[in-house]
Image (cartoon, rainbow over all chains, first blue to last red; front, side, top):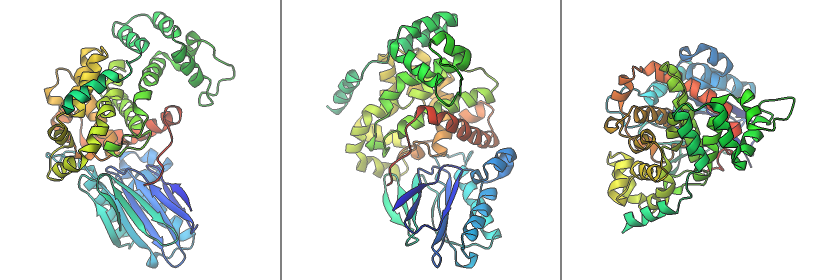
Length: 160
Length: 282
């Protein structure tokens, strides 16, 4: 088994059954995980922000930073490795937030709203998720089985 | 008593390198750089680190740099001073800090990212680089270094309170009798840091109570890093955002989002030089 680390604002796809995709400490960022159980192709995106309009130049160089540019790329890359959209299992985790009584920043919620909208636009339904709250999450995808695990700091590991 | 035991641990911390303090003080009174360089050159450790960075592939220089006076031509004064501060601070942060669920290197990454974020904030506010702010941002969580093992012991109780909606720092105080910001302020005082740095460390989660604007700026830098999850551990998302402070500096939600992009970019560029590699699984 070998580990493929997905950095902030990046995505990785693979068809290697011995691989584990992992992304660390999401904060308000969101991990979008796609997996086709038939061909065992999967991918993971660690997006930071909802909308590439925040910095269109960076979005061209680093599309994985934003939900609207990252998700389509993740999907295409999985399809290129043989995944079929109709078979894709979509799982989403992250989008935690600091305590913010004024609701001034709410970046986790904005990210999650964008992720839902863009997945929907591409005809993808979320099968399982663990989002929001004050949780800081680490997420992994085991390619052999499609198991997605979420570790919440201070709260143990669960399977999505 | 637990608090007395914690305070005795503070006494055991190795003192902050005198050269770095001296440099900070000289920069504060705008001493000429040549004099500052002479002070740095007296310390073999700092000189070696500066030369190592200057001669690293990152800068791609064709000839070898062999003195601090030469290095400044390539690095610039501000960056060179940053290297001194970082080199002085790194050893305190590098270990794993299990109480906060941080693997080796994670608290140091948080410190560096926060210092980078404070630079970006100064730029966005149209102000110049401020070494004292950079230092305060780098050291804002120094209290965690000592408190981590006590947090680990009381973690169950702390997390119960956090789940009931209490900020992590308040839960620390209730369960252990001490919190990481108060302790950090004590450490900075013991190390003879200037008042604004002590104040910023002490109030980085509670900037309204601070005497200077430094605490507000460190608070914002901390919020940006925690939002990106950099060294956010089990506690950072369970702390409060003070939106009054953000508004007080004229920052909008859009400003913050733009700064997150800049922060990630600049942090990555410096990461290769200053930090250790990413974690080792769950």
